[in-house]
Each structure stands twice: as structure tokens, then as C-alpha cells.
Length: 620
Ligand SMILES: [Zn+2]
Image (cartoon, rainbow, N blue to C red; front, side, top):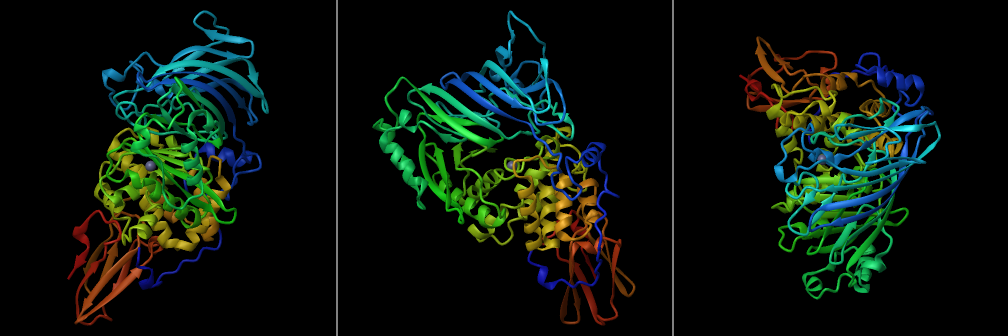
């Protein structure tokens, strides 16, 4: 918001002590975490903070012609918690396509099936399959509760083998699936151990479609076999390029890795001349990724491919390969690698203030907009500007929730809100866009103050009404973060944000940790801001009235918003401004008119401030 310069700091409230926790609602689970020292009340991880993790070694066969996938997973699960685990929870996301399961939306008949087929699970000498049932496996929605014959003690490791088969969706393409013949984006496809954390223990939320994910930071070693004509891209680094690609393709990838311009890896001629892949009946792609929250892959037998690299860490001279793979006819997808490079450099050097942590980013031309670690699955959108924004948003998720691992099922606003706000700065610089928050602000104000509303701290998975989810996860929260930055000032906000990222990189913060770090850096108690924005049903509406010899500005919506007004008196216009803290300790602002002797009119300027009711913004 470009109104800082005209602020009159008429009302100044200095707070010298931070008393966070005394007046905001803090649930018992979070209070217990402070008591146990897993988290500190200053917003940082505590000495007793723990996180479990797994090493996944998987061998997978995937047939793009049918969409059937079969795999063997050897999982080493490490219990870093102080608790003894009697069972473990395995997520089978693809069971959202199982007939009769609870889900947030209807799925067409063609994609429904009997669920993920579990051929065998074994833990040590114990086996579970069709014939042998040494232990109990109980299905709860898309989750499996697997009984452990021998409990997993603190500090212990469980080795688990799972073999399974699953039909992936051919029609529905929400987040993953088939995008035209021969083109697949495959996510949420393997048996994944759920998160066991210091707040609630096992995360037992079943996947029902709307609310997204909560993930540990794992290592992946994955071999995927596909028919010989398929190119394949995935999270992580390819280990055996020489077994799959021709020398020519490998040298182009290598060139792109250090290039500032875009290199064509696969053009139409290369596909026609069949000089991309080694001539084999089947190809096995071997990828390795460490400390990532998930693993996805995509394949195609007809996509084009270009790539460049982003200098993400100038001190270390570290570059990230940025590549795009797309259909032959596109509007702007052939520019996504170049756009992605600029975005990653902006994020790393200024917006996030922390270098993009991974070696690669692959943009797959699918549909909608969806993030995966080191990959995005996006539509080819009709304008350059919308391509920049969509790419920035999905790549932005690399930071939230993939680097800073918030629980999206609880607090979607912590990633969607930040990522509907922070990448808007990219539009400011790349597109010379003066008011990049406009679409977010309009979305927020048009649905606020209505029945749609829900306090942000309500857990996201409890909200299945989509317009409410949208307001909650995206527009209200993005506005809350944006106006917070206006109040704190860009420098203080970004210093605090960087501190939050660095403290919680590869960990699981809650919004309370964010609030506390912001307060530490701001040096003031911000409960007056958090309460109405995050805990209340307040909405954006400031009003102006003319009473006798004064103007009275009231706040019917009750959100702390900045106020800007113009008073016309005689032939002069006087502009006044107040920052959001003006509402900290008062319900109205009184402006005596004695000093404006020929008062004619006054109006609130709401060009860059959300306001749900335009009817109460002017007086004569
Ligand atoms: Zn998003």
C-alpha cells in the first residue's frame, strides 16, 4: 500500500512488554507443548522439539496406457518422539477413489474402484496379506492403522515393507491424474506414514479431498519403470541419466544447469526423430531426494521440454535447474521456465530472504495449479500476467508448506494466505503491476461480513463449504498478512518472516509460532491485531459520520484496518491517515472540524484498503 508517506501518527501506543498468551485463545494442546518444552513461547522450536521421519526406498511399475501403478516400498521409520508407538498410521490417499468412502465431492463412476490393493505388509518377521494375518490392519477412511507386534520405542527404527497396486484416475484431474493421452502427473500415490507430532500425536485426519496435507521430511530413493517411449520427471535428482536419455539430451540438460538463457531440451524435431530416449522396451528412472516432504512424478511421450537455471544462492554460487514440460500447442507455457527462473531469484534474494533450498523445479503442463516438492502442475493460462502469477504462487509453496512444514489440514491459511500475498511482489517487479493485491482484496471484501465467514483459527478440514474455504485459506488470510506488513513496515515484517523461515525450516510450526516470532521482531504485543483478524468474525468495514462539529470514524466490522480520508474544505483537500493500530484501544476516531472552517465533505479512501460496505464511506 503506497500510503505510508502520508500517515499522521496521531495516536501512538507503545507497548514495552510482550504478554502474548494471556489473552488469546491458546488450545490445551499448544499449552502442553510449551510446558513440555517442544516449543517455546517466543515462537522458536524448544529443546524437546522432535520430528519423526522415514526413508522410502521404492520400486514402481507404471503403465501410462492404463494408469495402473504397482510398487514395492521398503520404509525405515524413525521414532524421534519420547513416546512408545503401539501402532502406525499409513495414508492411502488414492482411497479417495474407493467406492463408498467419505469424500468432500462427487467423483465420476469411471474413476471409482475398490481402493488401493494391498498385496502384502511386513514388519520384521510378521506378515499381513490375503492368507496370513500376523497383525491387525484397520482401515479408517483413507488411513490404515497398522498394529505393531513389537512396539516402536523412542529412538527406535521400524522397517516396514509394503507392496501395493492402484488404478490412478483417468478422468478426474484434481491435483494429479491423466492430462490427455500419454501425459500423467502422479502425486499421492504411495503408502505414506502419517505425521506423529508434539501437538496431537498421530495425525488421524483422513484425506477427503478439500483440505490438503501434513507431511514429514523424508528421504526418497525411487525407481520408476515405464514403457520405453516415456520421458519422466520427478522430485529429486535423476541418478541414471545415461540409462535413459541420449548423449545429446544429457548434454543439453547439463548446459541448462548453468545457463541464464532458456535451452531447448526436447523440441518437436527431437520427438519426431526419436533421438530423446535410448531405444529400450522399458526405461527405469532412478531419482533420489533428501529432506523433502513428498515425492511426485510425471511422464509423457509427447511433451516438449525446455530449461534454464536460477542463481538462488549468490554466496555459494548455487544454481537450481528450472524446467518446463508442456504440450506442443501452448499459449505461454513455453515461457514458464524463464518466468520460474526470475521468480526463484526474486524469492531467494528478497521476498523470502532465504535461498530456494532445492536443486530443481519442474513445471508440468497439466491443469489448475498445484504444488509438489520441486514440481508444480499448472494449467497453460491465457495471459502472460496470469502465467507469472500462477507460476509464482505454486513455486511459492516450495517455501510454505514444503520448506516450512505447516499442517495444511489444520491451518491452510498459513501457506495459502502467505502464498496469495508474498508472490504478489513478483508481479510488482516483473509486470510493473502497481496494485497486485487487488484481486485478493476484492475477493476478500466481496465475501466478508456474510454467512460465509469463519474465524481463521478454525481448522481448515472442518470447512468443506468451498466459498468459505476460499475466503478462509486465501483471501482473508492474505489480507491479514498484507495489512500486517503495512503496519510493521516492510523491513521489520521481512526480517521477522526470514526469522520464522529459518527457525522452522524442515519443521512443523503452528500459527502461534508465527505470531510469537512476529511479536518478538516487532517488539510489541500484537494481540490487538491477531484477535480480530485470526480469531474473530470481524470483517472489513470502516465508516464515516458527520456529527455537529466533528467527523466520527467508526469501525462496524471491527477489523484493525488503516484509515485514509480526504476532507474537502473551501477549495482545499486535506488528506489524513492512521495506521491499523489506531483501533487498538478505541472504537472511534474523532476529528474536530473547527480547524476546517469551510468544511464541505469528507470521504474514506478505500482504493487499497478492503471495505465490504461502500455506502458508509462519505459525508457532507
Ligand atoms: Zn496455493
